[in-house]
Structure formats: C-alpha cells, structure tokens
Image (cartoon, rainbow, N blue to C red; front, side, top):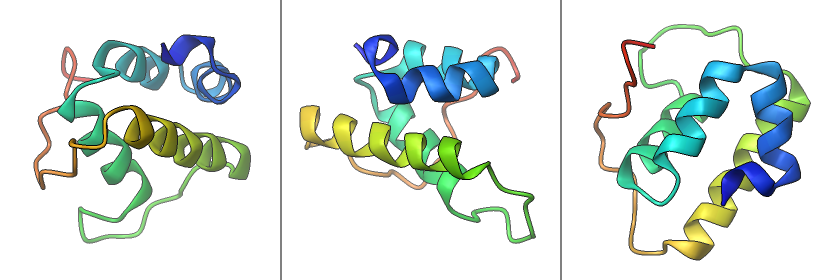
Amino acid sequence: MAEDKQYFQTVAKAYPALGEKIQFFWGHQELVDLLFELQHDTRGHTRQGFPFDVLTALYELELKHKELYPKLDYSGGSKWQLNGR
C-alpha cells in the first residue's frame, strides 16, 4: 500500500490533499492519470512545479505503481478528481 512507502510520506507531508488522492486511487487507473498529469504540462501553460524531493517521490511512486499494475496506462483523461480537489 502506498502509505507505507517513504515516497508517499514525502508527498503527503508536503501536500496532504494529494496524499489523500494517492492513497484513495492506489491500484486504479485514476492514479496513473493523476501522476501523469502532475508531472506533465497537460493544460498548456506554465506551472510553478513541485519541489525536487516531491517531484522525485511522485516519479518513484509512479514507477512502483507501474511495477505492481503493469496493465494500467495513462488514459488521457482527468477522472481523478476527489471531492472537487
């Protein structure tokens, strides 16, 4: 489970709402889409970006998720919204 990982703790500490989404969607397509969209400009404008440690943690979580759920791939959609956050 994601919350047991050091990388999850790094993200959840800096961005609690994002940590909640990662925990909720772990093992599902929505997490793949969320992690992709957080790491790529899908909105067509400049973003501030994450601190390096958080960006690294998101990447590592993406790798672990892909290892555990190899059939899930970015769908091109934004279906990961949780309570409008």
